[in-house]
Amino acid sequence: MNSGKYIFAQTLDCINKYEFGKCVKRYNGDHRTRDFNCWNQFVQLFFGQLTSRNSLRDIATCLGAHKSKLYHLGMNGYVNQSSLSPANEGRDWRIFADFGEYLIGMVRPMYADHPISNIRLENEVFALDSTTISLSLVLFQWAPGKYSRGAVKIHTLLDLRGSIPSFILITDGKYHDSNVLDVIVPVPGAIYLVDKAYIDFKALYRIHLAGAFFISRAKSNMDYTVICQNYNINPVTGLISDKTILLNGYKSKKLFPDPLRLVEYHDKEKDITLYFLTNNQEVSALEVTKLYKNRWQIETFFKWIKQNLAIKKLWGHSENAVNIHIWVAICTYLIVAHIKHSLKSNLSNYEIIQILSISPMDKTLIKELLTNEFSNQNFNEQTNLFDN
Image 1: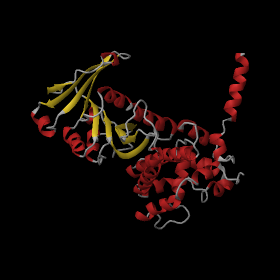
Image 2: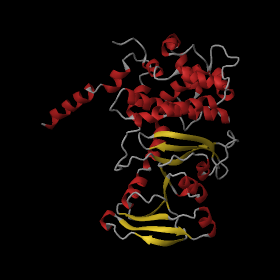
Image 3: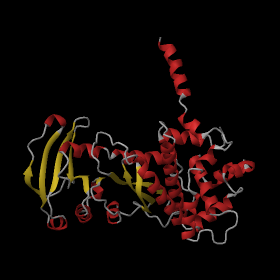
Image 4: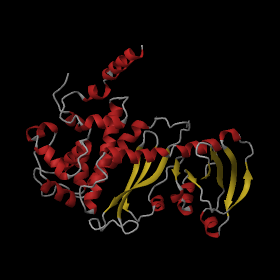
């Protein structure tokens, strides 16, 4: 039976307030605060993300129009933009980052058995990449980018089982992608899918020594010697060659002295030849190409958060405010993934957030809202009438 809770309040029930409080206490976030503490700040920013508000003013305007409902929505009173903005500027962004890390640790295991398209391996498989948010260098002087413009990069290590981020790093636009490899701790047995920007043989050798694997596109000017070649390949699959190589360049050979594998594949659809570099000698050459093909999931992830969350237009100009903004957006994605798994909903994350975005003040049970297939069945029945 419906308890009378608003949908937004029901989504907050999925969040462990105690764990959030631990993050706040760690950085003394509620020092000298009264009603508008870090929890209320998070709840209002979460509301802004869930409903795709464009600014703090939009959040304050929408909530101000429903003052009588705020307590039942899970908020402690109405706060205007002049209170919310200083909180984003002054409160430690690590509070929200740590809570995001907690959510990652909670949500990732839920999707541990999630299949990866055309892959039957039991290894953990990650895709590493970054997405850039262009900014005005006049307003964001701390975030230089290329060509005299401002930019912020969101470096993400995405677990392909469920498309759940396992690592997030937010930097300015000039931070080179390959530097992230020095920050990530490799998981033994895991497979890391990266593009050409991440070919740093020193960092890749560290992954190799940790017992992990990487698959990357090879650079066209790579100098190497073939020491062994697998002739047992089927050209019908698009495979051209499967070679074991040693790097020739003095610096490259010193940084990565062990043998590598080079797989050559022709993509008939795009009519291009691709070269894949890996240290994995266990999987088949065709599996190497299929694994790398799944790297598209991280592009889909970036596209999803940019299209469905308020992330392209930032709510503050300082580095602290930007970090809070992005981490709350990541938390929103993780909460949606948690709701999907907990309710065993057949809807996609996209469909769930679209429904939640227009239903925060509805009093339907969230389970009924996200798992009720009656309307779809009814639509299909009506469609079938016209087909007869």
